[in-house]
Structure formats: C-alpha cells, structure tokens
Length: 246
Picture 1 (cartoon, rainbow, N blue to C red):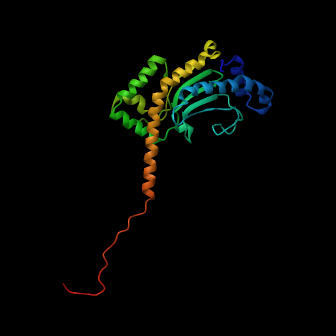
Picture 2 (picture 1 turned 30 degrees about the horizontal axis):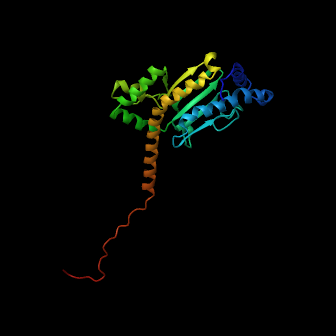
Picture 3 (picture 1 turned 30 degrees about the vertical axis):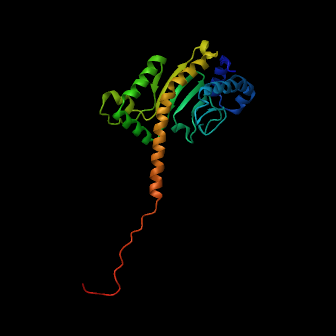
C-alpha cells in the first residue's frame, strides 16, 4: 500500500539531476528501489483503480532507466511518472491523466502534450460551434479544485473570431494540473487521495479530447481507404468495324 514519499526520495532525484551517471547511481540503487520505485508502483495501482473497469484504459509507471522518452545524452530520469490513459501507440499525442514526482514535489492532472495539428483544429472548430460546455467544464475544474490551465502555445496566433475563445485558440497542447510541494501531504497517503480526486474530476475532459483524437483517427483511416480504392473502369461503346450509312 502506498504510504507517501519521503525527503530522501526528493534528495535522491535532486542528486541524480546533478550526478547523472552510473558511478553515482549504482551505490544508491537500493534507495531508488525502496524510496521511489516501490512507492510509485503502489501509487500507480491506486490511481488506476477507479478506471480499471473502463474499456481501453491502462496505466504505466515509469522507471528511472533510459527509455524512449529520454534525452539521448542522459542515463537516468530525475522526474518519475505515472500515466493513466486509453491505450495508444504515441503517448505524447494521447490525452493522459498523469502524476510526476520531481525534486520540487509532485505535479498531477490532465494533458495532451503534443497532439497532431488536425486534432487541435477539430478542437477549435468544435469550440466555434458550441464552446459553452467545454468552457464551463474547465472553469469549474479551476474553481473547485484550484487547478491551473497550461499547454504549449503557438508562436503565431491562430485567427480567433471570438475573444473569449482566444486562450484556447493559442494552445498547440493542453493541460489542466496542480502542484504539491508541502511535506505534510507529499509524505503521506494524502497525496494519493488528492491525485485520485483530481483524476476523477478530470476524466470528462480526458474523454472529451479522447473522442476528438478518435474522430481524427477515423477520418484518416477513411481517407486512406478511399485512396487505396482502384479507379473505376469506364466501359466505352466500341465503334462498329463496318462502316455504314444512317
């Protein structure tokens, strides 16, 4: 059972940030396993439990060792993560409920960090048709749970006919999250309770973006199928071999 993190865990992550090499890590591997990996694994199980019966949902707990999400010049991560999301090939293009532990504390919430441009275009088109449900959903999350709206922004703003939609039109990625650094919560089970509460509250926005991604994937599949269809044969009437007069 997850019982919270510790000051030792945060100090280890800070140490690996400044000493990202095998010589520093190997003598402290037991600290990583006991203070970080095992608690993160236990927390992952708890965070996923409310979504275990949802078709297609899965979770993953990151390891400190170098992987596909890792900059090539590093050997170890200084930020540990848990993802709860619908199964997908590209995690960065997929709506995700996430939890991250770093030397600064914990950050958790929802994000779609690097969606395809067509996904965000569908998102903007949907807002132009009817923005009220989405805006109300985000406003309620911010007000009730003290969350922050984030996400990378376009360097060149997209044309926006409605000023109230501009904060969303400038986003090329989208996130809603909170941060915790206080020891009272971080070093106890309270952080799990808090993250589960936020994950449950964010499930509708996760499903909202998941539906947009699925619509775009379906549109691409249909377009690909259309392009793969052979051109229809045109049966021309053959001219008679014998000349004749009307």
